[in-house]
Image (cartoon, rainbow, N blue to C red; front, side):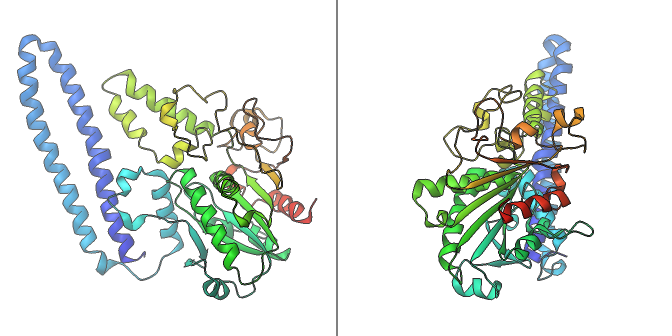
Length: 403
């Protein structure tokens, strides 16, 4: 069972979503249907509709008040239901909530917020020499920093395929110290990139031994967060870039994810097709900012957002920021696929299930992300298997061996 603070957060989040998203959407649809029906009654339709709307509004207000009250009661009971430790299941649920739900709902439950930071055995580790020495008693000069993807936590890296080591185990076997980072995937990728830049600066400066080598390994969104951190660090002249030698991107959507592009078009169509479907479109549009950044693979804050673009933009062509790779660093793009046969038509259409080959390999026509200088590694693994698949294990070994 999760801690009492998390239970309070869950009670308020569930009641907030049920109130604003579910009941609010049903209420809006009810009003839209009423307007459509009473429009056919001619002159008497308008006053009748006003009376019915008033009654309906009071009824829904009572329901929403009851839901809010139930949420507060659940929050009040959290002290009797909670424990003092976080379980892997509660951490995963918290990661899903933070990654999917819009920030306006999470504002009701600050207990579920997720800050970017180091994690060891489910605990936060401060980037200070004493804390790092205690958390990493066998710290080595070469570090590999792992960044999970959307709606995940650092626990994703410890899941081993039967008979195969985890990626952190591979890193440790090559004389490096694996460092796992957790971050809230619902935030903008640009903000997480800035936070990672600051964290890596503190980590390298406070590491118990001199840092002689640094590798970043990011799955999906994590790869974009790594790119954002590198960009910020280069602009600010951060010292942690000096030991950085390699960045490994596991299925990162450098040109965006086709699924988010489709969701964006779908929500726009629902919002603009009719008054009856508009509330459903608004509900679908309540995705987190982090998910919306995956439409174009946005990892910088240049003042433009996904909402500024037309719905069709990026559906067939890329529109991600034209930012070059850091020239002093080796970049490795691991590209997965749904079917083992590279020529299977599903691979051409869906890629690894969430990211198509052109996006993960940085090879879309425009803009090109420096793919000519990058090392593209195709593997027969689906998107969610890239964190532990045997072919990815072999690919990482090749990277660390300098192959």
